[in-house]
Image (cartoon, rainbow, N blue to C red; front, top):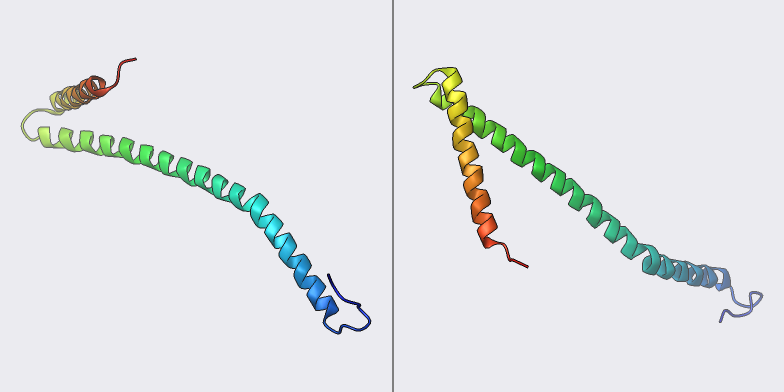
Length: 105
């Protein structure tokens, strides 16, 4: 408990330090965990959206590169549908593999 303010020259500093520490403890226990959770949600969503964007851009780049590569041997229209057929087959194969690994209810 603080002493007598008339006889203690450090009374104001001691009371201020006690109030500051109590307010800091209350703030840390109430808002510290909430801030951490909100940051985790925000950064998680940001990483998810950037990851999805990267996957889509990768598929677009691979499709375009495959079309350009096939354009060496066949005309452009044929290169386009061959690239779509090839990548579509890869996606179907990946889907079949993932479906075979799922757990049935």
